[in-house]
Image (cartoon, rainbow, N blue to C red; front, top):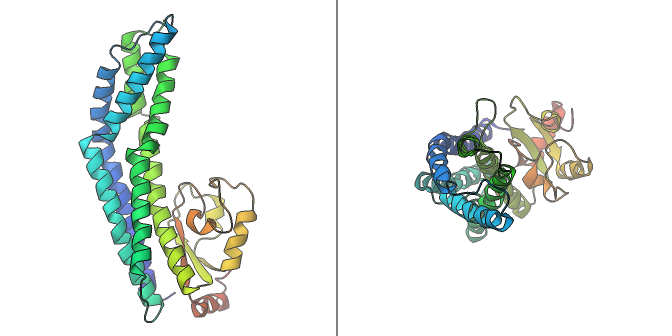
Length: 288
């Protein structure tokens, strides 16, 4: 790997982290506002479980109002927009990478822009549409159901709801965990999918597994990070079974997009055969 390619990879990683940090930094403010809204919305929620029909109707109403409040929070909407706009910057850096890797590289603009648009739409759906409704709405429904036994006071329910939204000293809020995980996976998945599409177009058969090793990096990633592989080797990883964090649907095709799975901060950067052979000579190819 040349110094210029390494530098571009570093810039890609820095941009990925910056996009995730922008979302992370906004969440405490978003959740503070959302917590107050949810308490108000649940003010008329029946605490007596005797009237089952009334309770079901109330749960549906609160679920609908709460998920709408989260998805319509102005600061949250703005941050999702900034996140997805940043995908274009990741794409531009990836194009720089391929321009340095391959002489006379010419991006297939329409195809590659479509990948960008599709990932933006999917991310917006997960963070503002069906995804947040499914995950957050269902979770808060369970909280309401669990506290309609007739023994929970209004003050207790308010406290439980606030902790669910904002978290506690020992537990991050449910929605924060969902948004952070979804944001990270969206950023990394887009970057990997884009690189994999270009690699297929260029018929590149070798890869460099690179990314950030973090404190909780799984053994799957630790064993592969910083090393070079043939495409066939990467495809074979999909047959290894259920390693920690593996995403459902991981196979010989999607391994290039999913990599180590949930929360994985690594990518398979396509390289030329020459780069691979040089790495092999210095003992940096294949599994450790």
